[in-house]
Amino acid sequence: MKNYAPLKSLYSFVAVAETGSMTDAAKALNVSHSAISQAIKSLEHQLGQPLFQRVGRNVVLNANGRKYYKQVAPALEQIVSATQDIIGEQQSHRLTLNMVNSLAMHWWIPRVNEINQFAPQLDIRISTLTGSFAMEYEGVDVAIIHGKTDDWQDYYCELLAEDELVMVASPELLQTGDSPKTLMQRYPAIIAANDRRKHDWQVWCEHHQLPVPDSGHNLSFAASVQAVQASVRRLGVFVTHRQFIRDDVAHGLLVEVGDSVLNPHQDFYFACPKEKLKNEHVLTLRSWLRNAFSA
Image (cartoon, rainbow, N blue to C red; front, side, top):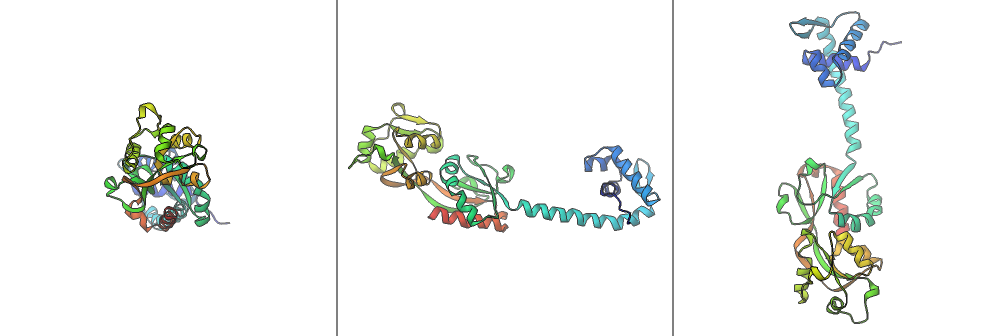
């Protein structure tokens, strides 16, 4: 039976050979000094000869050690490289996709089965960071930006869809011949009261030549997700982004009223670090997003 040197002894040997110090080798391998010392003693005992000699405070390879290092170090490098290749291949299937929470709740979740069928090899994780951020620092591979690209000049950006504002209400609130004006007179206006949505009602009302509702006399919610639910629950009428309510409209939970209006303040963009465009899985996701937003 062959005599196999334990891998931990070989890693310790190479680390000491390359650092010239058992203390530094211990730090590099995140083990104790005694663990390194014991591993070296065990290896030398198995080989039947010393591998190092002390020179001052350092340890250096002797003739036997140099000969052994020349053969062992490249082999260990191959093991490390092969391991990293396998781990990298597994991790490359995992992509972190960022989008605002409203889009994640009302647009992404209804389409999870579609992307799974389109690209079953992808493992997509969702994050919901808002505002501009460094994708690399936050661990984000791809982002769907709902806004403008001014703060994303260092990234690859591609328009997915223009942003359209629409008024929606529960079909149970509508009567034959109702217009946006009559609905606003009859029911409260539902308002998403956050900075990202502050222009929605104003842009839509200016297009329809209607007064902008006063938030003090209507229903205000901190997030679009809450406001959409309030609309479904027949609490009033709501102006929001068509991508947020596409599926609620398709399933008859909400109805669009009046004309849609292009939003000059926001659009939907695909964004990623430029080097990510070399990743076939990122390109697959981009292809699916293009089709999903244009459908």
